[in-house]
Amino acid sequence: MTPKPMDTTSPLVRLRESLAFFRVYGWELSRFFIVLYLPVVLVSLILPDGGAENVDTGFPTVAFIFNFFYQPIYTGALIYQLARIEAGQPWTVREGFITGVRLWDKLLLVNLVSLALTLVGFMALIVPGLIAYARLALAEFRIVLNGDHPKDALKNSFEMTRPYTLPIIACTVVLFGLFLTLQLVIEWLTATLAMPLLFPVTLNTLLSVVLMLFLTILLFRFYGLAAHRPSSLE
Image (cartoon, rainbow, N blue to C red; front, side):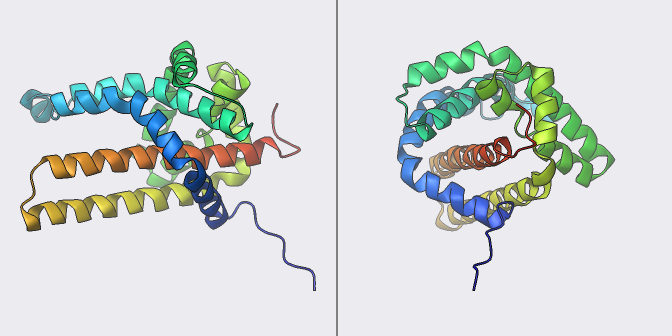
């Protein structure tokens, strides 16, 4: 009897594949990512609320704004590192950081456009926002790994993700659902055991690092899958 071929678009397959990659390279990736993510942690600890005036007016906090503008650097560096690891090539934190800085303006522009389109989709209906997120999820990879211009990166990501829209959404929902569940558990433990504030802050920071790493690995697997399709854009 011929075995049934594996469905490569299955969210479960992608999550298992990403988990296997994380098990092998998780510690190495974590050390790398924490070094580049440390400035975000320090700013968040120094300015956790960004001042009471931001809470009253609804404006983003200083820590959020810093993270948003710094995020392209560590994301670009992480994508660079993932590609080097998969190719079996050496890498350094310095090379990753330089890559992120060099592509900062392009990655930031892609993030701004993707965020704007996703927010518009969420304001209209939730589903269009999720679809916009999934269809533009590989734009950063196109910039770092293919050298695309931001406009081309968005266009190519939109085409590449056509067969993988629902799997990307499903995998992301699973990850964020697990993340939020663990956050609730941490808050419950903190309140029940009367633990110091440092306990939830530290654990939530670690959870954020793991979530960012795993989500980037997951999207990297989708990128590799889409890039090897005969109809993929080169």
